[in-house]
Image 1 (cartoon, rainbow, N blue to C red):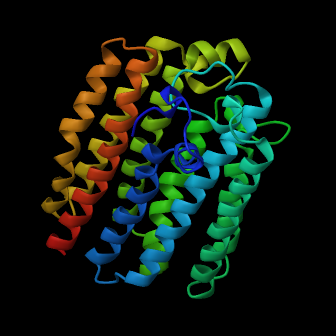
Image 2 (cartoon, one colour; image 1 turned 135 degrees about the horizontal axis):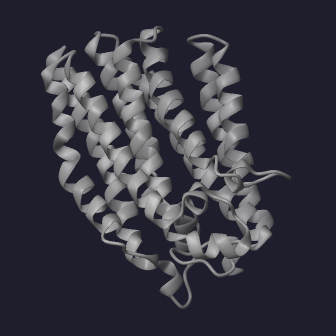
Length: 299
């Protein structure tokens, strides 16, 4: 998708699509695909529960994107950013409208999650509430944890462990070691998306006092951490292959992941890192799809 900050008069539709950050959506789809693959491996796949889980994941991802846009915008941390357009920071959309959009998607995710809990187990409501709270307080509230170098932890937990294990659990109603391996692998790649984003923003985040993990680690160690996350994902794929060698179909992500890693390792900065977000996001999706297909074939 083109950077709409370069368009003179973007239409309202283009503005809202840009604000939803489409390039981040693979991080919402991948865990549901992977978790459903785990369910299929034990002949427990349930299509309508998988669709509900996908709806929850997409709603929360879009909700957190709008929430971050709103919170960063009103704090002024998006005033001089590098990268795609932000609705509030650009002044093109009133902050209150973006806030309402964020809360609306959180409400949608909550409603779909309620349906899953009602057909599985009610304690899932607590997990859903924690996910929504984490989504809002990432950059919102009086003490956002995204400003205290904890963003990657939250992404790993909620878009890795919770999303994959939750998707598998609502279908299997059990937690398996295969699901754990899959969740760690998907979570590592989801983290890599945020790491690449925060690596790009180190200069502006440092100036505005936004203390991300990338700011804490510094440029060089952040690039090394990005590579480590890809290695972890590959290690989890090897673990999954002990259940069925077909799980190695997840290696189809390698061309994309290698290209992303090479760009990061080359020392690319600013706008040159934007393709990394696309490549590592697609890597996560291909990883999950390949793994899920392998689990279906090898069951």
